[in-house]
Image (cartoon, rainbow, N blue to C red; front, side, top):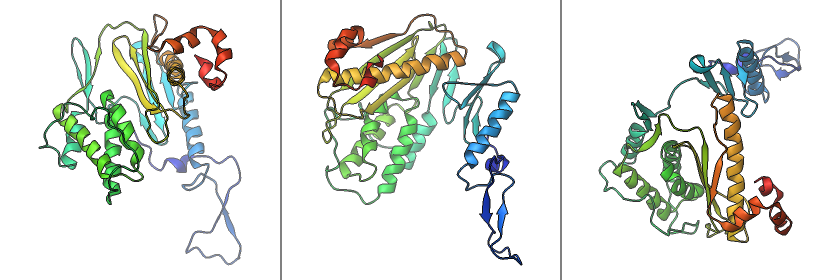
Length: 327
């Protein structure tokens, strides 16, 4: 759903004046216009539109999520409606370029048509498929090879691949790697992106499967790649979260600070994972999904697990930022 001229519907709470429009002549000099309604170009236009839309939805019986203010819900069970607002666009019940197929076993979603469109635009429909999305042990940096002249095509390709990760979590890591060089890509970065296209060619219809009658328990797997960035020595946080047997959230992201040991990198990844679990727990409550069991978090680093389980160790880890101790 889209709202035409959305910002023109906002009400102004303060006095705002503007210069006379070009071509409008007034017999008096130094005159200005006092705005009665919001106008495109005002700094407060989007805020005022959001406030008016929120009041209208709440008046119609919707409840605004305390965790995610852009989520509005109404009703229960079969009469349940969820609205997700993004500026003047509202998603009520739709899949954007995502193909969904329901069966007796569950729901399968993929982006086959979108993947084929990417291959066709890049002229890779007839390419030789690759078995993996990235060469094992490949390290990328800004000084790799020769910088390319056509930066816009690289940026467009990365942008389209990023949206493909909505149903292809196995592409998350490599796309996270190549998206770091959109400012000055090289031939090596472009060839790495082309390998991703060759991997997509091997299975364009691959996606996610959500089985029926799955248990309502969050299961979380957290990991990190210590000092994976060859330029800044930063580690990579990676996690995946399952609701029963269904994968619902995943991430591969460079950590904001440098970890001095592998267990510190693992602990930072664990902290980011716990924050995501907290957000998902409250979000499931807003969506009226009852979680039947406590969340189970898996981590393969014994030191990180020991710090999380024993608060006494916190005195020995003061060099780690206090935000990590949310675990």
